[in-house]
Length: 115
Length: 110
Image 1 (cartoon, each protein chain N blue to C red):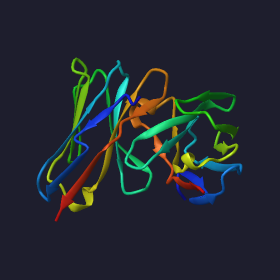
Image 2: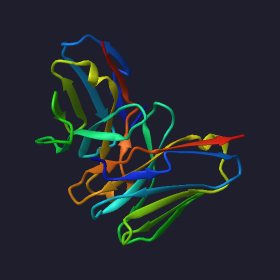
Image 3: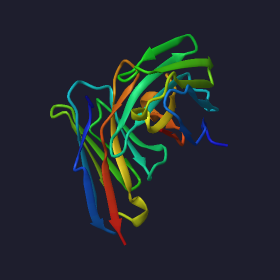
Image 4: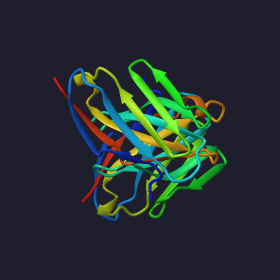
């Protein structure tokens, strides 16, 4: 099984619909992140969480919300999806004790299309 | 705006040649990371260099960091067709989050 699992892998949704992307990890890491990638571009941080009671906005949090249900689970919601939220979404984890050594572990991504 | 900027945006070389990618950043960092992404897939961590380190090696990878110039380079020696991918740098900060550049797309021709 993958260390960081994202579901669904692909999703097509209609404008205005609420959608949730889920992320779970078996790494035992305390830190979790949601990034968005647009074609030909790098990753932009949406939200991040350093532990279950900690939620922080990233650079592009408008239109998104998150929930850290447990140390291993971090979900991203689009409250009312719009076409310019069409993108590849990545969940990542890191360990506050070792992230300086090992960086992030990424999931395989969710390809979201809003029509 | 992105903290790290990779250069070049795209690089095409023949198998066996070396590939060099550069990353520049704007503010002070705690560390700098390099990642690889195969088409449309998740990023894979390659190597991390701390701000007090100048050079690091991992297999065919060599990373340098010049904090005075706020730049880093990733060298892949003896490239293979399987090295074809996008490569991203990410700057790590004391706040515990990293900022990614837009990447360099490397094509290695057999």
